[in-house]
Image 1: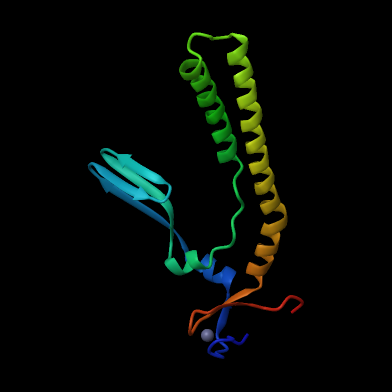
Image 2 (image 1 turned 45 degrees about the horizontal axis):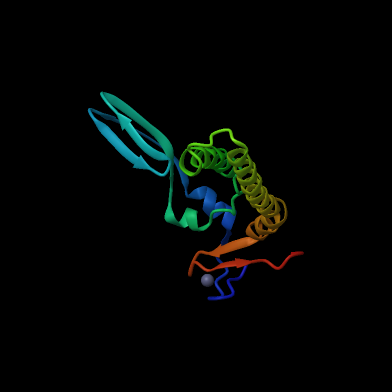
Length: 158
Ligand SMILES: [Zn+2]
């Protein structure tokens, strides 16, 4: 494996760089303690224990492409529908609750909003099923030079 930048033969697979940089941490502390991690704020009283995963900067750089999550979009859809309905009922037509105008406005809003969410889900689906496998494949063929840090791919078929 020769680095195209510095011609060094010392290169490792990107997936190995990524795995080597992940390590489990287990810390415990006494008294009032707090820790700010990537997963959120941990608060503890008395004795607290934080278990998590720490990652080196190098490992983050070598991280594989990740799947896009659908749940945030669905959550946004539910919250958006609730807020939108409330907005139409309370702000726009406070005196015409359950009258045909407010109901048709709500239907219209729900239809447009759901269409936008469906399009967004389609974009995410396309990414997860078409673009992501290609990027994963590319990542699987990627190497990192141990001398200069250059990330390069093997041509496919090798
Ligand atoms: Zn190099």
